[in-house]
Length: 222
Ligand SMILES: Cc1cc2nc3c(=O)[nH]c(=O)nc-3n(C[C@H](O)[C@H](O)[C@H](O)COP(=O)(O)O)c2cc1C
Image 1 (cartoon, helix red, strand yellow):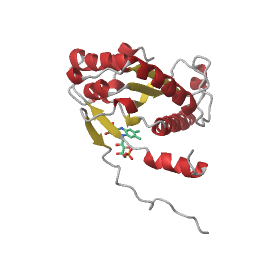
Image 2 (cartoon, protein in one colour; image 1 turned 90 degrees about the vertical axis):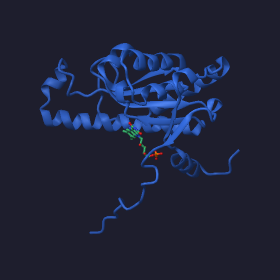
Image 3 (cartoon, protein in one colour; image 1 turned 120 degrees about the horizontal axis):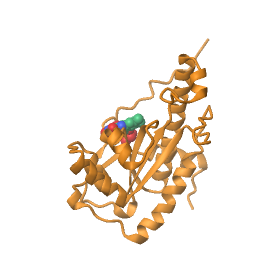
């Protein structure tokens, strides 16, 4: 057992979370062994459910769900299929096919703007400013959910990377993956299981990792 206090553990996890972009060619793709996949599947699903304990301000009320976010989970085989689709059908030459080929799992977190929800009775009743303010808070809440997920994955020793998604954001990929049009991609969370970490893949850190200060804190004196 760790002799750290709970705040110390939380601080360690928050500070240890880091972007790790892991890439490989589709030909170099290495399958997750079945037992490893099964074990980690439970952990990832539980991490997603726990991430859903993020705060949210307004009930979004799509499909009778209050939450303003959705999580679309691609296990390794589906992520590999998506990599092939991106590369061979959509002719994507950016990093996404190689990221999707290298990951152990991929969670696409979307949020549900009211702005695009033209059929919603409630949305029609709201003036534009109110709608925008609500959308900002839906997005803020969904972002909190994503950070929760990254922290849970970090706590489990899983590599993770929050990407905007590149071509995964587009209508072709939404259709291919069965994601409703009214959702917007907030985060493509690429996950690497600890058992799958080896030197065969390319690894890149987040470009802003060391651009941090605490100069943005201001203690108000009146
Ligand atoms: C909303 C959001 C979108 C991001 N999208 C990308 C992305 O598309 N490509 C990328 O290289 N990094 C992306 N990042 C990760 C940042 O580059 C990374 O967090 C930053 O460099 C700091 O590094 P760290 O996460 O290791 O602290 C994104 C982060 C956030 C919060």
